[in-house]
Image (cartoon, rainbow, N blue to C red):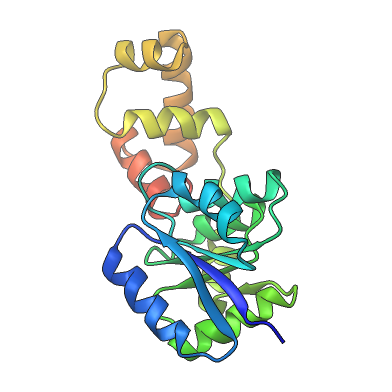
Length: 203
């Protein structure tokens, strides 16, 4: 029986090396490749033909959730598992919507991570139980896609004029989206709204 081939994508080399070394100790798991940027994953997946791709969320080039979606949309014959430090409830929902087969946090023991990889390879979906409970408690994001886009752009403190030009929207539309986001999140201002949305993994 051939081993399960995995691809590791994490912007921290120490994490990549440690995960690779630990998982290589499993007789049925083989590390086919690794990279530190999200926008390198698809090409590397085509080259190495992994069974399961382990993705960090916060990576340069492209975030892990977007990579999972690309892998699904381009019909690559592999499944994806999000392995992240950021166990935010909204990230879980977004990752599963994007097509990820699993979601675990980085402090998962190596033996448990290996078992998760086996289950995902077998066609199952695996989610960190504590995170699943938190996600259920928090509920889905109340923000529309456009509100998320405006909040994401606004979190660095850009003016309404700058935001309008950047997003190709009128200043009034930007104000409306910001006001709506602030109200939905029960926030004090747009910075507070962006912070709350980010904390819940909705941005």
